[in-house]
Length: 384
View 1 (cartoon, rainbow, N blue to C red):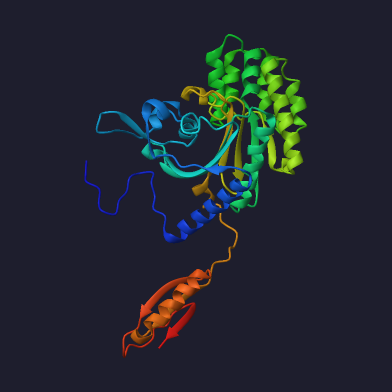
View 2: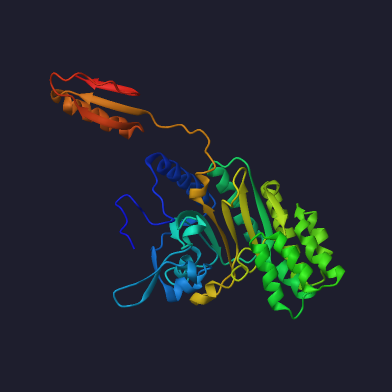
C-alpha cells in the first residue's frame, strides 16, 4: 500500500475553510440559543467511549463503528451518535437529578462507510434529548423544537415527515402473523425507501388480494391529520391503533404550537426499527435530497445503563445545512489599522477599544519609515 502524500486525508473526512467554519459556527450558535430558550441545557461528552457500553448500545451497526484499542487492550469507539453517551451520563453523573431532563448538544460524530459510498465519516450534529416523559406532549415538543431549530439555522422551506413504528409493527403482526422474517424484509425496504422492492416482495409472498392491497396502500397514506382516519380503517390491531391515536394527539399539540403546517404524516417512516420504539421523523429542506434532521422515541435505551426511562429527541445534521445556502447575515464591521512606530500605543489601544465594541479588526500592521501605505479594501484607520 502506497504512503499517502502530505496533502491527502482519509476518505470521508473534509477540511472546512474559514468561511465555511463561520457559517457552521453561526448555525450552531443560533440553534443552541434556540434550544436554550426551550429549557434545554448543553452537555459535552468524550469523543472516545468504551465499545462494551456506549458502542454496543448505539443505534449504529457494528461495522460502521470506528474501533481502536487503548494501552490496556480494551476496545474503544469514536462516538457514532450522541444519544447513547447522553444516556450513559443521565444514568451516572445525573442519576440524582429528577426527571424529566432536557439536554442539548453540538458535537462531531464518526461512522465508517465503504469508500465507494461517497458518504461523510465525520459530521456535525446539534440536537436534544428529552428524558423521562413518555407523553404525546413530549414527542410534540421535540418536533416543535426541531421546526424552531431549522428556522433558527436559516432553513426557509422544509417539511417534517412523521411516522410511528408501532403502526407498522401492529399492521404487519395482524396481516403477516407468524412471519417475522417477511415482516423484517418489508421493514428493511421501507427504511431504505425502496418502494419498488417493497411492492415486489409483497407480490412474491403469496398474500390474498385484500391483504396485499392493505399493505401496499400504506405507501399512499401521506398528509395531515385526516390520513389517520384512513390508516385507522386498515387495522384492528391494538398496537397500531394506539400508535394512530398517539400521532393524532401529537398533531393536536403541534397545531397549538402553530407548527402543524410543517408536518406531514408518513406511515412508512420507520427509522431504525431495531432502536426506535414509537414515533419517528425526518426533516427535508427544499432542494436537498437527504434529511437535515431526524429523530424519534427510544424508550429502551436508558435501561441498558441501569436507569430505565422513556426518552425522545432529534439530531440536526449541521454540516448538511451548509449545502442548503443561507440567508444574508449582517457581518460586524471589518477594520484594518496601519500605524507608524511612534503611534503604536495609540493605534493598538484604538484596536482594543473597537474590538470591545463589536468591530472586527482584521489586521494591525506596522508601517516602516519610508514605506508607502498599502491599498486596503474595507474600513481603514491610519496612525502616522
